[in-house]
Image 1: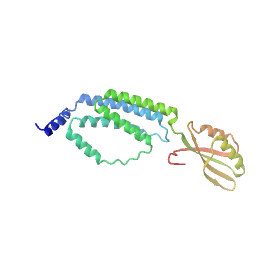
Image 2: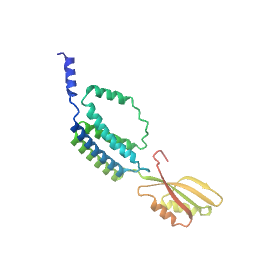
Image 3: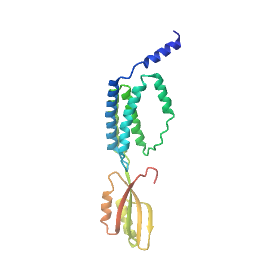
Image 4: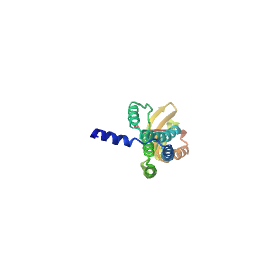
Length: 223
């Protein structure tokens, strides 16, 4: 037996195991548990405008499908090489709007890989530690503040009084302004981690404002 035959025999021996139904079920259960934990952390730390339940279900499915794929291809060398070739030509067109969403997708994939290879304890412990550290970082202030557009209407004669009231409330970044003969409609940007209800209540106490409203939006791409 030459060196090439020895290498072939060693490689094929590593892929000679068949897929065990028991191992497949355990891998799916572990991936399912970790997927639920990933969704829990995502919901607790979500700071966007619209929460997507479909994305959460995608995280859960991604972890389980990855575990199934790893369990399948680890038993057959030809199948594993074919799977790599097939995945190399796949192009995913769905845009991920938030960078943190991509990180959660990688987390789900990593959990599926560890579950599929049989590293159940490592998968559970690493996910638990990762989730705990992420929650600690989120609570320490690494989360971004929410951005709002505060829209106010007032009479042109009350320009100075309204400007002072807005500055006192912390609303000073003017985005747009529409002026008519008697009324002014202005839009200001306001950022806060505690919401906008307090500022709206404070502004409504001032009789100079004809109306006060707010809209939530994302300002990650610039002011």
